[in-house]
Image (cartoon, rainbow, N blue to C red; front, side, top):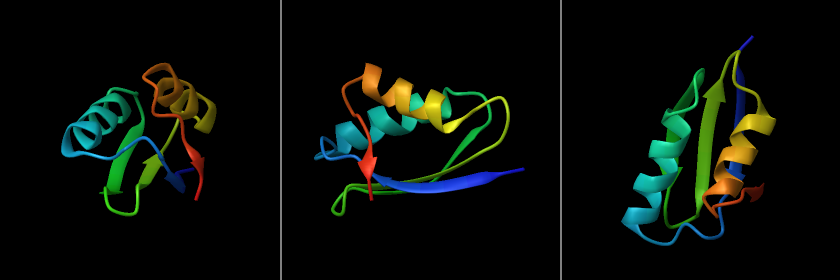
Amino acid sequence: MMETKTFKVPNMTCNGCVSTVRGELEGIPGVEVLDINKVAQLVTVQWNQPASWNSIEHALTQIEYAPAEA
């Protein structure tokens, strides 16, 4: 079952940040990036197995773009 989540990434302040976050998320098997709003610092992703929210959160934390609840 596909899951969707929108979350805030407080460190995402420039286009380079957006590219980094998008690249990291797209590198996780099962994750689809639906939308990234740089101004609002919001990211919406959809995922299926083998991805999980834990794997998404971990990947972003590793690159210092830790998600916060939106």
